[in-house]
Length: 206
Image 1 (cartoon, rainbow, N blue to C red):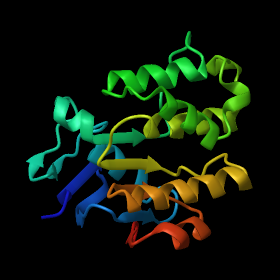
Image 2: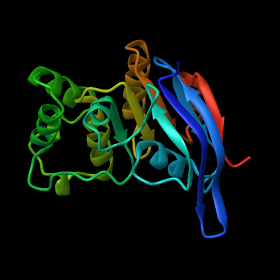
Image 3: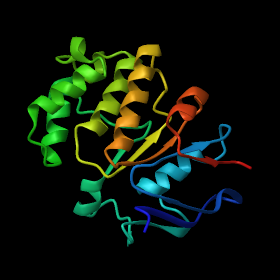
């Protein structure tokens, strides 16, 4: 049985059908990438799968059970990096990541330090989110996914605002996620990243 099952997912905005009975499965240790032009429904699909937005029809199952983002088991299994992530305004980069790790059962302080180093956030570890550049904020959003337990990782265009070094680090991390048995569902416009990591491509807007 696939880890993630999406069945007949449909989302409408007025008379416009953005998602039209979308079906796919995703197994552990595989990366599926949504590809397609802007406005094709990639972000909407990710938000519906993650539970950040409610579909009009269809269902999403994780391990055979309806994916309810409010259930503790689901929150422990799914890490989500969408473009509208919020940060704790009064916490530094390191404090933010430590709190997220602790809140999801993490007790490995060294693990937080490794993620900070991996995403090039060491120079900004004591800064507040409001003082970060857009690229640093994007790296912090990604780092927030990797300091917590996860079996399914959902990312919306994680390459945005990353420089060449950041993109290389992201590619390496995604391949490591796959090796660790994590299922990854993501949207991307970067052809090189898609070629490097994707096991499956889901064409949107056809």
